[in-house]
Image (cartoon, rainbow, N blue to C red):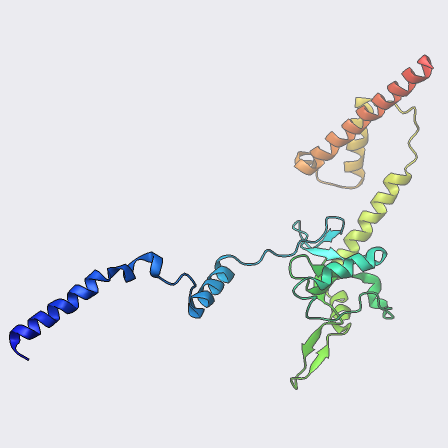
Length: 248
């Protein structure tokens, strides 16, 4: 083939490709993505758009060692509804725990069963100090690599720790104070007198050998403020009761 013929052939070849440029239009492009593209899109949605975590019903009591209260307290009275929610969690769908089993060990008197509000991880919470511990029915690996249950050993050891014992003492004192306040015999006709009130406070600090700078602490001042408010509310209620009696 001569050089001129080769040039004509090449020119005609390019002309055909450019004349058939319709093949490059979007209308002729495949609309269905390939399998690899679909896989990429699925992974992208998984990482960029994680699934919405299951929310525990608002009727369930939330507990925990801090104000966030990230754990759901197991309730025997609503066992069916509680377990139904738990089985839908990530942990509950992969685990098997008999929440309503009979607990024979005395250690259960100081602990309650809970589950994490987000993933459903089964735990127990100490009644004394609100510490979160491993649930006895959950699985762990032993020194030989075999599966076994945690049992109540962790709970027993925890109850002997100084922090838990100290918390138990504090709770006992709080309980005694609460009982005293609830059972305190205060005459209904007691009249608040500022001088008597100040004398009682002074006597309380002196007899108990408390430092006098105690009165400057914000907790003491808040206590005094609440006591005065309580007396004001009490007198308001009495006035309302007397007015009701008169009109009746």
